[in-house]
Image 1 (cartoon, one colour):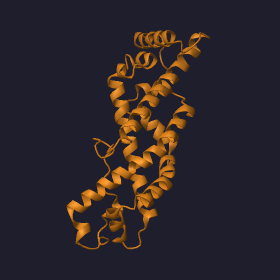
Image 2 (cartoon, rainbow, N blue to C red; image 1 turned 30 degrees about the vertical axis):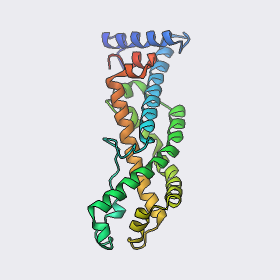
Image 3 (cartoon, rainbow, N blue to C red; image 1 turned 180 degrees about the vertical axis):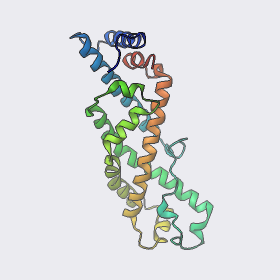
Length: 229
């Protein structure tokens, strides 16, 4: 059990409550309940800002491609030994074009995933908010990802399948046709798995940036809640 009488926790608590009262976020109903609910509110806001930032970046043109953490490599599906047919698929230039096309297609998957994440952030049960606040640069992101499991992959597969078929991209079509026993659905599944990792990397990077500079959110509750941690 935490020592709420310590100077460290007293300072953090006072800063957080000051921010909450200034924003009108809570009504006084007892000190213990305010402390518990306020830290939950901080984590929810941290996740909301982190996920919104990440999806805003990833759904811009070349969002995945230009990201320092979310650029997707060619899925293993396109590089297994013995599966590549013809010189064109062994060409670095062709493979880079294919990689770029897949990163662009991943933007469609991210648009489908964004509301799924937003709903999870809104409804997620947070039992130990203080531990998440104190847990490190990407603690909240890790918690959310574990709670959501394969939800993003499942949401993105049909969207990416549809996007690939509608795009009818000659580079992607040529790559798929060169792989024995592989179809568009297989490619969509493979891309969804990699896009899932990329999205969480971007969310984690956003969380770390917000923890480093909470003022960038212009959110008084979050700024007060992260102060001292």
